[in-house]
Amino acid sequence: MRLTLKIALLILLGIALLLSIHSYQTVRRETAVLKANLSREARLVGQVLRPLVIEIWQRKGEAAVQAFLQQVDSVVSDQQLRWVSLEDQPDPRFRPRVKGDQLAAARRGEVVTVIAETSDGRDFLFTYLPLQGPGGQRGAIEIGESLAGLHGYVRESMNRSALLLAAMVVFSLLLIGVVGSFLVTRPVQRLAAQAERMAAGDFSAPVEVRGHDEIAILAAALDRMRGQLAHARDSDRARLEALEKLRHTERLATIGRLSAGMAHELGTPLNVIAGRAKLIAGEGLPPEDVARSARIIGEQAERMTAIMRQLLDFARRGSPRTSRVDLEGLAAKVIEMLRPVAAKQQASLMLVPAAEPLAVAADPGQLQQVLTNLVMNALQALAPGGHVQLRFATAASLPAEAGREGDGPWAVVTIQDDGSGIAAEHLPHLFDPFFTTKDIGQGTGLGLSIAYGIVQEHGGWIGVDSRPGEGSCFNVYLPLTAPEQEEQKDG
Image (cartoon, rainbow, N blue to C red):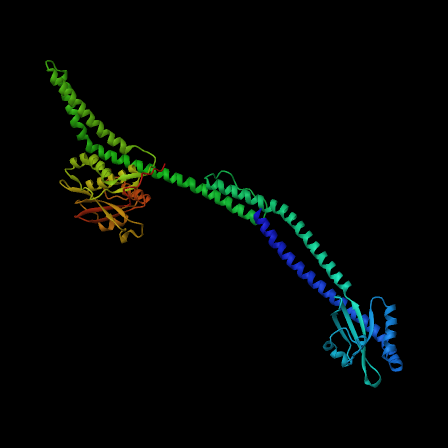
């Protein structure tokens, strides 16, 4: 309604201005016409009286002329007629009622019309018809007409214009209010309600505004946007679900590779358990040996349980959750989980402690998948006796090859190996989905792509430096979180 009121006020302001100008011009024009009519009537009267006045003046003098005009004035009700002298006249009866400088033209023989205020404060229209009498004396017939009627007409015209303007404003406000409510206010309210629903994520209700005006066009555009947003949301949801499935698939593939390395870790405690169980089952074993064997069986069972829990935790598919993650602690878990794989390949894993605590805001499960994939790739590139090292650092900015800027500081996790390295022609495609240089059955081609996507989602970047025969170095950049920052969870 506020928009309708603003439009109405602007329109009415323009109408009022135009109407006021029109009324003023009309009154002014009609006033000028009335004054001209009064002056013309006075001149006609003067022209009729002029021959008689000249004759009386020549025969009987000014006193007789004055007496004659007084008689005429008593007969004419709407005009005042007097005889005035255009010479310097001491007698006040013959002096004009206007200033002398206004009668200069009359002294030259021209008819003069002047508006002047009398001694009692009334406005009069005076017309002077000059005459020349005996001996070259100059006089004039003064015809005065009151302008009270003219002023009354002007006031009446202004009052009518004011009443017309007030009536037009009231009627226009009512009309615009009613029409604006149906054509503007209600459609805009429906559009605003629809926008609120869309902002809340509800794209089910269509936008319905009938008509062919601008608001209807806006409603149609809003409805198209609603459909596009709904489609985009469904597409994003499907894409995220597909991405999460790919990540889970890669995680399970990694579990398969881990299982081969952990078979030895599980086989040893199983052999110990089987041997101790046979001892307990045998006869003649002292009670203290039975208790000792039972304790060893329990320890080995706990060891196997811990190994299986690590695998299950890594394979579990959970909803994304962001929290404050200690990088060194998370890397230590990854190293511990991958030690059997490294032992099988006769490789060593080394974790260089950080100089200071490094914490990032991340999903611990997704970040663990990143580090696991990178370390697994490093182990697979090693020859027997190779080394993989994890170390930590901080950086004020991203490297130039990142191609973008970001607010620092950054936590940097470096995974370096002395394996076979990567050919230069393969580096540009290293993070492409399904790109792999491994033998069939040794990789899905999704590990590095998924790791790169996860790091990007966390606002970071992965860089790689590799030369054939010299090994590879992967640097994971993540936004560093202040140690005192509280943990935040994002469901």
